[in-house]
Length: 402
Image 1 (cartoon, rainbow, N blue to C red):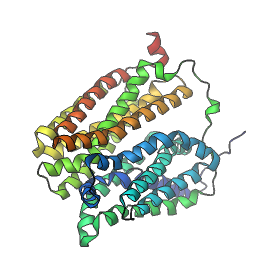
Image 2 (tube, rainbow, N blue to C red):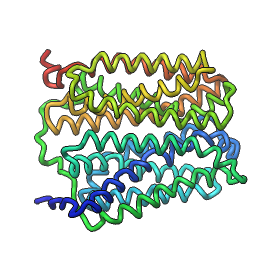
Image 3 (tube, one colour):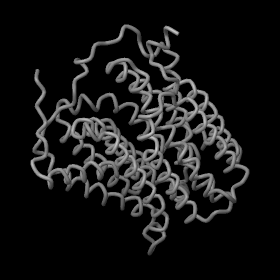
Image 4 (cartoon, rainbow, N blue to C red):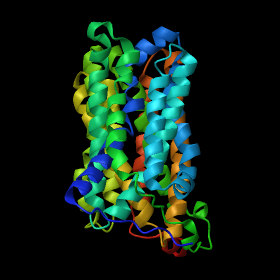
């Protein structure tokens, strides 16, 4: 079966609409669920939740990522990339609206639906960028990662003040992210006349050995997974950690926003740099060590929390970008790359889902954030070791022969 050929934009205006649509979709890929953290204490008090139950709110989208991500390409092959991305935005909007219902069950349901929508868009948006901007992949990837970080960071900084403004409350404050989703839906309607499909995996020739049997594949996978474990503990609990160490709720929300913005900034530096660096072992190792040092700083020098937060976000974002790049750099063919991507996503999202719940349970049992932060420190040190191995200038097949 021949896949339909994509028609390139016929005018500059249609090209601008496409770029705007991509960036608006990117703006919806984190903010609707990471914005919960600054008002998490309000939600805990409103529904009388335990630490583990509260951590589960952030965990739900990650579980959805792990389950839905492998199905996204199949959905796009049936519906077309443009229609699948539109459906993803619809799901995100439905999830946001569901959380207006004053029920803890609906809070979980709405957050799950948001996670399903984000999972679909997460998988398909890079595919669309590679197809429509083949000569500008690095530029567009940097732009959409930066947009994602700016939107989630800005929303995190605003959501607590919004919840206090004229007694709006946390539900309306969280619901305000729907404005970004509606804007995305409106702009993306310009793409619905197209019905193009992603490349089929049947085009790839399977490698003889499963990627799960390579040490190098596990190093890349655990670099991404442990980094996600650390990142989502911080995304979920940073405002609570900061308020418990004497910072105001407004400061905590602003720092939380700064953390997310800083995770996007490495894209501006690393994506162009990666083309010049053959071996990324030292860079990966240093970023992991700096992450560990920043978590130690949060624990023992909370008066410098803003610096540690920015540093932690930058290093976390750097490890994420390196890990994603290793999926292509360390594989020998497209099938291996797709297999390693699936392996790293399944393990990575599982670790990311466990992190916030473990941290919440540890805080509930100890009454302190010391144990959760030590979890982050250990994860960062392991990231450094995995990054050192995964950053070597080799590929899976060559590493097995060595």
